[in-house]
Every structure is written in structure tokens, then in C-alpha cells.
Length: 259
Image (cartoon, rainbow, N blue to C red; front, side):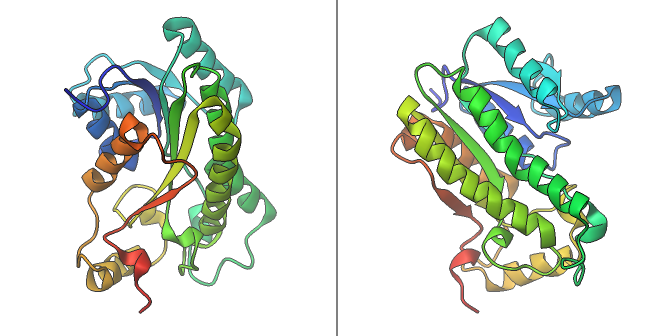
């Protein structure tokens, strides 16, 4: 028996086997969940996502292309789910984007308008857009989660506009929790510690961040993908049925440290 037995949901954000979404899917599948997946548009991205899922033992995955900046694509994904399955129980939002040229120390104040607004759109707005559509497919309630980082709360050199977008994401989560709670849909965020992913490596000085966390975090180690994956499975399961509107720090305790 797994804590996600009988649950079906959508996982958005698997790019390869080093992403948070991959680790979350791994934990969900182990706990008995049925997972549906999206991939960035294009055959290359479909193959890359399919290869990652094959590593999880998912040989014939449900896959749908998604450009999250397109309302038409968002409608298509959730309408396809409605027509093929009727309902879902959970949503994993694990996408973010900011132009890597502006994720360098000393380059925040000069961030161009288009870079700033794109980061806010993909990294924060899409969570609300997906949660709204997902809730319509959760007549008996459900759970939605998104991924954040401590740079939403404190200024992390090089994280720049992504930190601003993640702060907006966390605020979005609170308002989603307030509104969707009336429909028994819970909304939470996991603030994961730094992990070597395709996205994180775009942040200037990332290796130094990893070294610092390992030195200063109470557990004296960086997190693993499995740390986040298992926490996500719990948040999406009925075991966390009284938890909503929260930011769960899965960061080896780093966020409690003053110096």
C-alpha cells in the first residue's frame, strides 16, 4: 500500500533525470500514483522527457506538449485530461524561467522589462493558471504544489529576478490556498535547497552556494532530489490533509541559520 494509491495527477516540469520534477515523479510513482506529464514543445523535448521517464520505469507515458506561456496550450492540456480521465487529484508545478544572462552578480538593477516580466509570467503566473484549471478537475478536492527557493525570502547574489519571481510565486500560493480551500483544494510550496539541475546551473556562483550550504546547514549536507520528492509526495497525499498555504523548507535546515 502506498500513500498515493488511487490518486491521479499532472506533473509539469520534467526536462531530464536531474530535475526536481523527476524526483517528485519518482516518489509519487513509488507510492502508487498515476502520473500524467507535459513536455516543452517539439519532438526533441518529447524524446528527452520520454527518456527520463523510461528511467523511472514508465515505458508508455501520457505526454502532452505545453508552452506554459500560451493560454491555448494550457487549455489544451487540461481539456485533454478532462476528456480522457475526467478528474485528477493533484498538480505538480515545477517550472521556472529567467534569461540566464541576467542571473549574474551585479546585474539585477539593470534587468530589462521584458526579462523581468517573462520571469514573472513563467515562474509565478503559470502556477495560478494551472491551479485554476486543475481545481476544475478536482470535484472531491485535491492538492497542488509548486517549487520555490530561499532566494524568494532573502537576497541571494546572482539569483536576481528569479528571486523576485519566486517571491511572487509564494504569495500566489497563499492566495490560491485562501480561495481554493472552499473547494477542498490545498495549495503548498516546497522551498528546496540548492540542487544541481539544468536550471540552477545558470545562476552565477552556484557552486559556491552549494559549498556554503554544506558548511552552514544544520545537517551539514546539501539536499538530494529524493529529499524533495518524498516531501512532495506527502504534501500531495491525504496524510497532509490539514496543511495548506504553507512553504515547506526542504533545505537541510539552512533557512533557520543566521550566520
